[in-house]
Image (cartoon, rainbow, N blue to C red; front, side, top):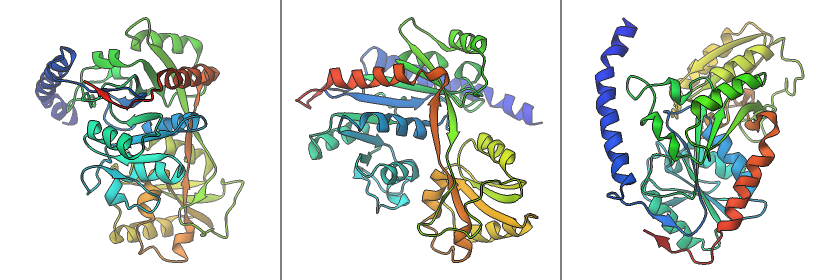
Length: 364
């Protein structure tokens, strides 16, 4: 029945592809105009709906560039309840900015983070209010063709390559997979560390669309658990061996599968509470957390969530002591397969270094 239901969505995918193909054709022919700025603009995005790991990759690029340049990152601020252009601060609320921009701002308080659904307007406002900016990173801007980036980075999940997917709603592609040709760099994210050279060559051949296009493979790395609530540390933490521990895993992200697999290897038992992506937690959810926690059989127990979910959970003021001391998040970062980070780093840094300009006038 499920397969039949999916098959019935296929005609809608054909219609969706037609609409997106026409839109891209109009941009390609210059009928719909894109704005190019005389400042380095790096777009990082995907063709697939959610779950490719944009945020840790954006954070990697921020960490790389902020050592030498004044960097700003511009996001749509998905699911925020405010509108227009807004600078994100460490004291901002999720409803004002969205969870991912706020996460980045708190991790990099010295980096300018802004949100605006209209990316052209957002860049203009950044350059007006902060003319010292050397480079701008567009978060999730691959489909936002009103801006013509100087460098475009496309992510695709190793477990769900764009070449093996279908257009929405039958599949998860936002547009025709052939449009990956717009990317200067393709990153195959969430690659297993044990990938073979032959598999790398096969995927590179399958995904690559032009001789000048660069392809790199990255994997997810997990760091040590950190308290969700500042100053709250459980009396069972730190623990070096989790095999005798149980954990409630709370996720409100698009693809929690890899995280769950990772924790199942570390912990004696896991109860997973899976919420929709960017879910706004409420006081009723606290009872679900407590029920799951009490259902754990292990003597030592924790509640674990993602870094993005932790941003939203911190605003849930009805989590009280001592229960709040049990909440931890698991930070993630990316690393490159086969140590190709040096080549990637040089490519990104040289692009910014060579394209820095004193004027900040947009060019139609």
